[in-house]
Length: 426
Length: 188
Image (cartoon, rainbow over all chains, first blue to last red; front, side, top):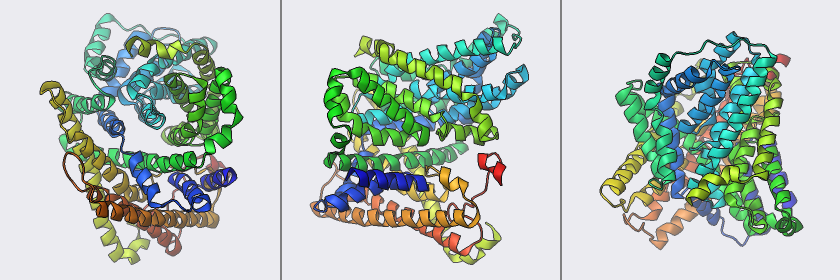
């Protein structure tokens, strides 16, 4: 039974079928092969049920807010703000890049939107300053992945729904690890600037800084709404997402006048398309998850290991991290979360690990895996946006992957990096 | 539209109409969801009570957008897939694999659409209605078989396009263009 599922999935995946086919195909193969007594209509019921948790509504809302902002001026204003405060440091420009990506991640939640919004204006400046292109591209890709950890995060919403963990808690728990990665990246940028012997940029005057601060003050309202609103218990994640949309509209259409009202239907169409593409996977994933749980496959895969995990939660965490990391090297993180989470659920339950801690580790692995060769999906975003060959894009990635591996180990060893903030609250 | 698409004229007309419908549903669904949730936040925080129907309206809209957007995603060739092996192929082999993928996916979606019809029929017979709005559940979930069918139709059109037109086609309207920046372009 296990062999059948794995074979069906791997063959369909490798041949290049749309990801919903391996998921639904494996579920159907199990159903017809071993459980012919089950009504197939139940699979459809599971698919529909899979997209109905109300918190999932937050996904299209955050995407819509991000789409409106990407069209508008928010990204530039945030970038200017970081730039005026940081650029004079050694490695100031790459640190600006990492910090701006983190900050934009706090307003948009989409890795690809961050690569586009920050990579396009910053890469020419970094190259002009004398940084090697392989370093620059790897920096932009990996910094954009911090967006997965910083709330709002679509990866965390999907994980929260599939694993039955509070999305609000996951959001708050992502902040610590996100800032840790930013700090480690900044350190590496400082070292890279020293090694490549790049001169410092001139320091911005306080007049410029105040101007940048004033211009970015309204966009900075996004993290206040999302993090502050959820942290204070004032908003649920879905409500925070709805308010983000309203705020993005007021800002970009009303205040900055960067987006016209007539452009909104086009933006909504693009949001609807991405939503459907992601949610059809969530639907197929729900059918898959239901079917493999029914067939007892998680027990078959992990078996005795589930017993052992109770004695050694460290080992359990290491195995979970490795599985998600390797998965994301090959396949889109959302698919990996949909497939692996139900398999590991009994393990996480048996090991007594904090599901929020596990969630942040899983999302961090998704972030690392997506930027890791051979097939990490962000590499292909970068190839498309920067129009550079594959090998050039991946050449600079190893140091970043090493840094992220260190961050993972720190997060495993010190769960409070993630849990400190939510523990204050929940 | 390319010149090679002329032979598809009547079909193309129908296809355009369906495309407009899909676009309208996606735009309407997303904007309705935004308005609904914004109104709900305002209502809860300023007027002191959530709108009782917000949850089920959201669920209905999500189902609508997910399944009715399926076909539109096929048109735009946007469904996520791992194309590493496919990218290594050229010419006929590439076209053959794409045709096979489209045909296989169409078959799976048709099968699921059939199950969805049975599912909706059961809902119809049970007469279930949503708790707040009292809308029959089968009406809301009608978009599931319809969306799956439209998705299957787009994949079948992709097969047809690949069989009748030169070159490889990712969908009925999207030709497969090799990106200059793609890694394998070095070898061709």
